[in-house]
Image (cartoon, rainbow, N blue to C red):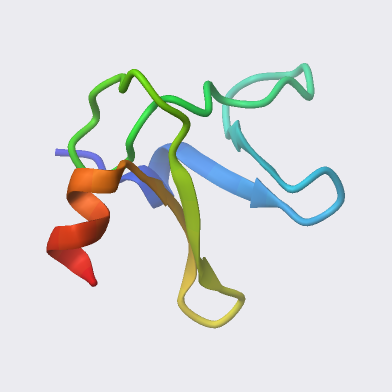
Length: 66
């Protein structure tokens, strides 16, 4: 099973997530939760820091994690 950090990286320049294997600099859908890997009806929150890494999570997963 692949983790979100294996599939996506956080760009500090545009403050969005991008896929490693894509050539274009298009951001990942902001409604995709990296914890449950489901598209949500609302935008996700970007959490984390430079040391631990960034992640975008939905409200439900955010309550579970924090």
